[in-house]
Length: 385
Figure 1 (cartoon, rainbow, N blue to C red):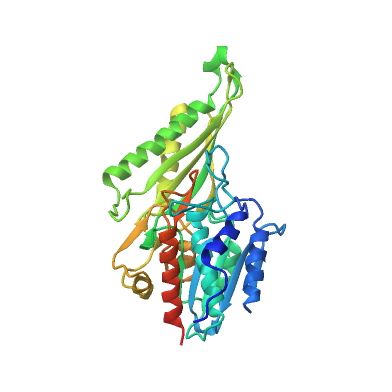
Figure 2: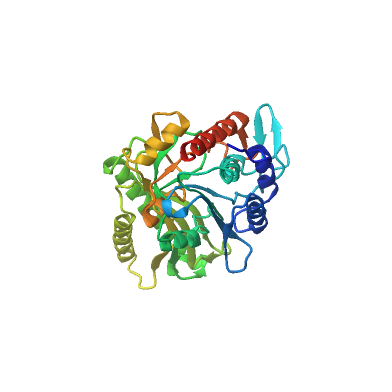
């Protein structure tokens, strides 16, 4: 095999230098990757958003009509505001066998290794193609990848399997929970706080709504489905944000609540929402005020992933990493979309640990990067003549 001149570490340093925080432009990163691939004779398809500031990238080496293996990663990272960084978060810094920088673990480390193997593959005769898929705005609900999903749906020949390189310490993850994020609006009647009983406090409505969520969660814990492959073995309901009120002497008429359901594959979130709706109806009837209102809207959602342990991709990726076991991860990924909406068997397997993700002084170890590069080398050997 012929190897690209750039190492994965050098590619990672360049990727880290682009401050691609979610909802911020990533187009310069995408153009840099596209130009790098072009220098190896690999043409990339760039799918831009409406204003052209953010984009997905899809590239193929080999004859696409044979399906092949897709390597998938997101290019956006979470913000650094309010975090105590000891190094420049957008300059790769090596110290004590660790590579520090925003996105090193989640998940530009994998992206760098995947980009390198695509470059390397361009110099090989392949038995089956290899694809690179890079997305944007994953961190805010797997939003940016949708145009790439649509493109893959329309493709007459799709990749046979997909490796999403989210950090798993290179363990092979067969599943993750689905998620639906929602915003509830509670409407009351404003008034002077001295006459509060004559008004209708929207924050009180909100507190009662939160109690509905907590009660349903408790029932799920006690009697719901369990999957002990997860650290939290049941479907979770979580309230993350509550807003309302203008001043202490005004009874608030609006309260908004952001909450989520992270569901096991065996739990249908629509069934849970029906129960929430029923309980809300009972709550409003207790208020006996026609102007009391509680409604909600979906902000975003993505499906869970549950790849059959007997599927070819499980044994294939195990052979690349040299591991025999599989795990499931608590965090969501784009893998559920590839698997459920496009029909591509998918696993999650990447270097680094999510324990370092989203924190100050995020890092990936040199050892993990080297192991990921070895996995990519094994992949290229497997698909090359």
